[in-house]
Length: 266
Image (cartoon, rainbow, N blue to C red; front, side):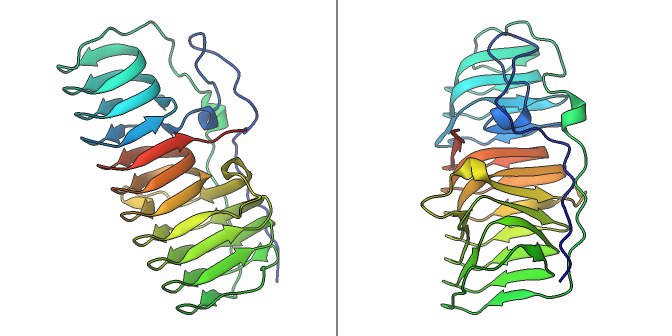
C-alpha cells in the first residue's frame, strides 16, 4: 500500500490580520470562506464565526444571525439578518447597516492552491452496523460506510478516491489526521465525519481535489461534521439542521436553513 502525501497550499497557523484590523488572513480563521460566492439561506440557525469571500458575494438570508464579521466585495443582507460587522465594497438589501473599508483579497491567493491526491487501489468498506479496528494511514480507493457503520482512522495522512457515509454512519479520526480526497465526499442524513473525543475539529483536515460546479463536499440533513474542510475547486453544501464545527473553505459554499456552523477552536 503506497502512502501519497497530500499537497495543499494552505497555512493553518493562527491567523494574522490584513485587509482590516481584526480580520483573519488565513482561510481557516473563518468559519466559512470562499473564493467565489457564499450563500447563507433564510433561517440558518446561526454562524458562530467570520464569513468571507475573496472575490464574490456573501448573501445573508432572512432571520440568519452571524456572530462575527461578514467580509466580501459584495454583501447582500435580507430582512432581519444580523452580523456583528460588515466589510465590503457594495452593500445591498433591506437589512441595513453600513460597510467598513477593507482591501481585497482578504486572504492571499497563494494560500488557496489546488489539492493534489493520488489514491490507492484498495477500497475501505464497512457494512451496515459494522465497525473496524483503527485503520493505519495510507492510500486507499473508495471509502464506503454503511448505515450505522463505524470506520476509525488511527491518525496521520490518508489519500482516498472518494468518501460516502450512509445514514447514521461515522468516520472518526482517533488522532490528528489529514484526509485527501480525489473526488467527492458525501454524508447521508445523520452521518458524522469528525474526531473522537480526544481529537479536536482543528486537528481533522479534509482536502478535496475535484474541480466541479456541483457539490464536491455535501452533508445531508442533520449530519455532523467536525473538521477543517478545504475544497478550492468546488462547492461545499451543508444541508438543513446539521451541526458543522470547523472551517469550510471552497470555491463556493452554501449553508441551508436550520444549519448551525461554528468556527473551530485552537
